[in-house]
Amino acid sequence: MYIIIVGAGKVGYHLGSLLMAEGHEVMLIEKDRSKVDLLSFEFHDAVMEGDASTVEVLREAGANRADVVVATTGNDEDNLVICQVAKLMFLRPRTIARVNNPRNEELFAGLGVDASVSATKIINAVIQEQVKAGDMMIPLLTLKAGDVEIVEVELSRSSHIVKKKVKDLSLPPGSIFIAVIRGEEVIIPYGETVFQPEDKVIALVKRESEPALRKIL
Amino acid sequence: MKVMIIGCGRVGSVLANRLDEAGHEVVVLDRNQQAFRRLSEKFSGERIVGNGLVEEYVRPILQEKADILFAMTDKDNVNLMIVQRVKKNFQMERVVAVVHDSILAGLYKELGVETVCPTDLVIKDLLQTIQES
Image (cartoon, rainbow over the protein chains, first blue to last red):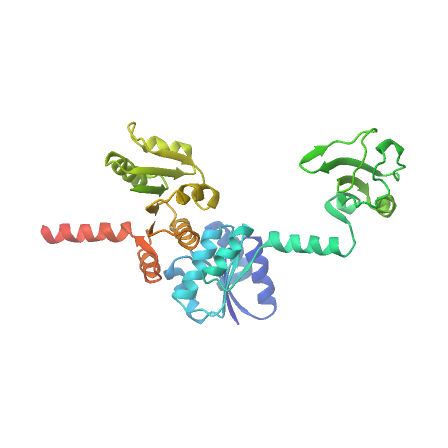
């Protein structure tokens, strides 16, 4: 397949590399000259400089024979116009837009973009999936090459620590509560803090202590 | 008439001043507060600092029945996205995008988007000047 990718940021660059490795013909279009220069070592003739929301640049890139046009820039307005021009002017059957603001997804669908991809939505879906699977501890941040994690746990009614004070809990060594989010309020917990159902507890925990912490919560 | 102008640049600000002088109700929106310096001291319309691509800034004004909206920021793609969103989400007769790229302006016109192309207007003017000389 011939695939035109617009925007040589992280998304566009890696997508291009992967597709080329799979044997597809790729053209990467990027506005920023310095990025184009850097990428030309790896992409050779498969990268070009230009504003792909103009008809001239898309024509030069061979949009009339592209199987797919993917707009991956960080600006939703550019991604929308790129896909619309590819669709209207070059009658491309498949246009894909990256959506940076998830609220634009519906608009794009109504304006002729064939598919849109929102990183925020995908990550959110993965998190929801994990929560549903009963894995209630969500890793928020991994520090120091995975040794230490910041995790979030939403307390259910049946949690062991509900109605208990922080000072009465025996936390496993290598773990500490750093915040409790109760509705809109953020509480920095201390000995007298009492946990309630639906509290979101944020804890700093060493990897080896995670199972012990999970047991307590 | 109630007119909303998004983008208080060299053209947007003068349009706002003229319409205001002529007695129309004018609302100007720009991301940058400094842009309102271009408005005349006598300008009596409303100034709003905000992003025209974010519907929250546009909705309150359009819900009070604006007659016409001009999207005239310096970015064609921003203007095209603004007008397409407004056309989709609000019942408005006239929504106009300023599009500097002549080909894009023509393409979207075919799609039913009302566009004004400054490039085309300048060329038309220049050609006329040549013919007259």
